[in-house]
Image 1 (spheres, rainbow, N blue to C red):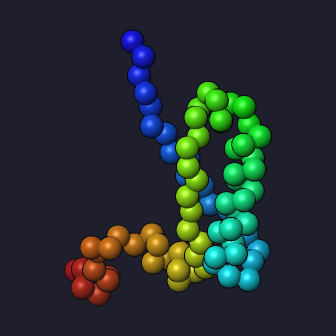
Image 2 (image 1 turned 90 degrees about the horizontal axis):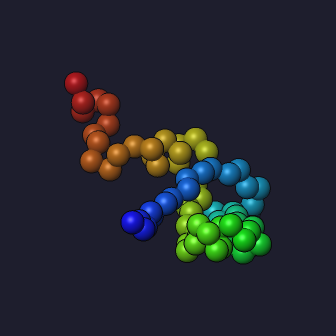
Image 3 (image 1 turned 60 degrees about the vertical axis):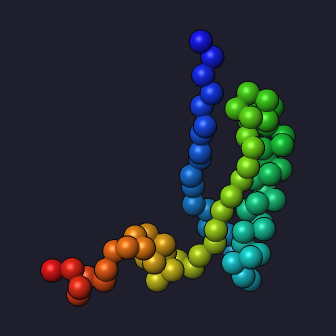
Length: 77
């Protein structure tokens, strides 16, 4: 029996850029180029999309890892 498997690859890259948008664009272009050149990713694993979001290390990183519905520590006994 043939099954379809939806797969996701998650990663974090450090990109030197002048803005979040520029960092996202740099990585997007590099990944698209890599995927398009990979016969396995294009024809066997059928890569369909690449998605990412830039943030600053430190406080932005902490906010990204905090659940939206989670209250700050002082409100959680």
